[in-house]
Amino acid sequence: MPLSYRAYDLALRCLQGLSPPLGLWNRSKVGRGIRGRIVSGRALRDWGREYREEGRPVAWFHAPSVGESLQARAVMNALMELEPELQLAYTFFSPSAEEMLHRMPIHAGGYLPWDTRPEMGSLLDHLRPDLLAFTKTEVWPILVTEARNRGIPTVLVAATLPPGARRLRGPARRFLAPAFGALDRVLAIAEEDGKRFRRLGVAAEAVEVTGDPAVDSAIGRVEALDEDAPHLHLLRDAERPTVVAGSTWPADEEVLLPALRIVGKEIPGLRVVVAPHEPTPNHVEDLLQGFREMGRSAEPLSRVEEGTVEGEVDDVVVDRVGVLAELYTLGQVAYVGGGFHRHGLHSVLEPAAAGSPVLFGPRHENARAASELVDEGGGSVVRDPESLAEALARWLRDEGAREEASERARRYVERHRGAAVRSAEVLHGLLKERVGSPGKTPPEVQAPE
Image 1 (cartoon, helix red, strand yellow):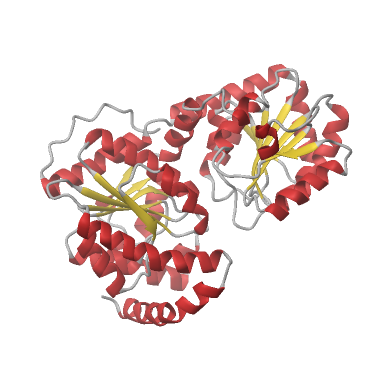
Image 2: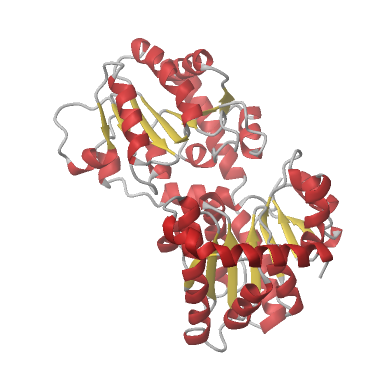
């Protein structure tokens, strides 16, 4: 183990020792994460000791947050098709992914415990996974090291590394290179990502381009929607032009609300559905108040679903998570948040899969699909309230232009379908090498362009 990893391990052990009091009293996301790591580590070890079935292979997937969890889920489902006897464990890092636990096809799951030798060594010895899969970018050095010491194959699926990623520079690169170099396979979204992972220390023969499983996740969620669900049929109105804004942050809303004030005066009957990234009560109430100050009727989604709202509702603020992909099917045009936020743009794939032309802010360097969607005419970048209002009005007024952009968005996601199966085929091959499972013959899938 490199000296830097020994120091990292020691520092995390010290932090872990100080964390229980902080987790007890801190009610923020940080506190939830600390409490979750304590409970989940114990629960995962108990599952491995009591419920892991001998003779059945086990794959452990880790995803940092919600978006990566959706990518992981698409690969899990495809892998289960190839290996029906597979048992699945799932961990996440961010408290925002807690709600994914009941939506994953897993046997055990929870927060990722502290990345220390005692924690990870014990967890690996209890779970005894035959495969460890990380998602997108997040690779934990001690976990990789301990898995490698036990001969457990490690893979990074949906591997993405933007050109300006800090992992490629200075101390971060020197620190992370041994962990990335120890991975058995890196399944990159595109060839450019693969090249950057090779710069980070991944062996050339370990890199394979399989595409983005988020495409399959987005298509699957749209295809599986229940059109009679209250949050859909109560808002579906062919007579009202509708804009759906998803995963918005306050920085987005500072641009979005003034733009909607302009468009609302130009487009009769405009309806807006806004799903903030963090739908806390205060955030939801602030958005509702913002719409009402424009003289528009606005209600939270929960009241609309209850059927307790009298009269027409102009604007709906989504006060829960898990329904955004379906809500995108209501709109003629979509706005995706994060492009005015320092953490970057959220996924444009779900509205594109729903057939909506997509608008977003200028900070989209971390989102390959966004740039490609713009190049293909299915999306557009906006930089201020005026340009957003102009783009919304253009697509809402001009049905021909909107339908063409919609079709281009659909074609984009259809062309990239199949990454989950391609990724699962690689993982299934590693499982067969380790446990000799016959599995099923995988279906043929086109390689990504």
